[in-house]
Amino acid sequence: MISLEKPIGSRLNFTDSEETLVSEFMELVQDILHIDDVQELRDYVQHCKTTRLQHCVNVAYYTFLISRRLNLNVRSATRGALLHDFYLYDWKNNEQPIEGRHSVVHPQVALAMARQSTAVDPIMEDCILNHMWPMSRQRPQTKEGWVVQGVDKLCAAMEMGTQSARRLSPVKLKALMVSAIAARY
Ligand SMILES: [Fe+2]
Ligand SMILES: [Fe+2]
Image (cartoon, rainbow, N blue to C red; front, side, top):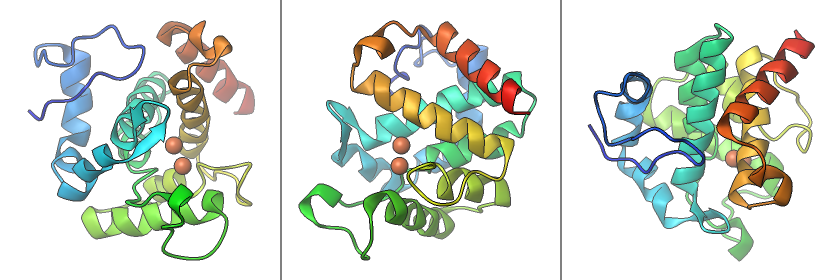
């Protein structure tokens, strides 16, 4: 099993392969984590001290927990979440490969990268392509896509260490997301 820093806020031991939740999560994402380009996400800073790989793992793990609780397509949601920010450039240094606003361009780049690396089903595509809503025009089309766009924003807040995010334990985060999704559907 590939070693992984544990998701932000999690109390589980991610080095313990006997931990059921950890092994269930790793089973879903292990092949993606072995891809060299995905490992390269470690070289980019996403928010403050959080690398892009760690951010993607954070979003994937909480998406996994929530979609599991809501009986959604856990595999597609988790894999889509892991690949939602799969781009290898620093947009702040003007390294973006195509023109346009970062919030619109990077999901498209991430989707193209994901397609080069693994099979991408329509749910994964929605999770990747529409995670920036409402900064991008198209809103998520699937329940899984809604989970990813919400978890992405909450993880970003936690990674940036905002006061409100610090008060969010993983349990509260889950409850918040479950009620938000349940209210929508
Ligand atoms: Fe993003
Ligand atoms: Fe993100």
